[in-house]
Length: 310
Image 1 (cartoon, rainbow, N blue to C red):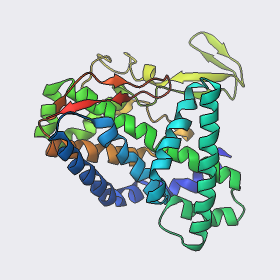
Image 2 (cartoon, rainbow, N blue to C red):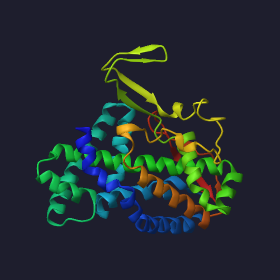
Image 3 (spheres, rainbow, N blue to C red):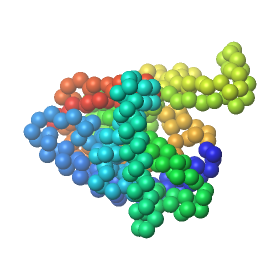
């Protein structure tokens, strides 16, 4: 099932198709930086709400063919579904999650009907013929669309926020990026290693495994700590140091590996790079205006707020 479902959406995330989206992403970045620059003239601004969060939401909804009128709804419901990764906190929380899933399901049903008669260059339009051919069920399409939606913006929001936090807390590194925006890819890879937006993930042992002197029976659920692997001193020298000159920073596991390697990696890398370059070029005097507030949660790691000023 995993292989079948992944193969249906993989073409939408090919590096070539993602590169074709660069112009659209650049327009969204420029528009958000323009607005951010205007707001900064009046005083401190939260970079997360003003820039880091809107960009990935706009891009993943565009990629999936979701109308602009639904963007606010998507962001709100995406937050609710993403929050359940660490478990249900209360009955109220559970109701919020069920409501979000129900409303997203209804939205995707409307979208499928729309794209069946008016297809576009988007993921849902690609999936409608597959649905009509019986290669995917309505329930599978809905769950797949919700997964892509949440995974497509929650993680990239945190990647941009974590990178900017690391840079602004180290002004000498921010100045290096301002002077040489081509360093953006290095910053992104080291951020993924040092402050991964996804801290852990789950796997199931398919066979009996002997690991570090312990026995893991087949069928056992295992929690893998990606952030721990990214700080392995046998792989990374001085692993607790944020070092954008690290030669093997790209050896991190923040996008996982194997058959579960993150299908949206090309999109996340392009978005993050264009975002950092635009901020460095347009707002070189950006500094922290307060202490960044971490977001709660174990699975996802980011900043709830990142106050900045010029």
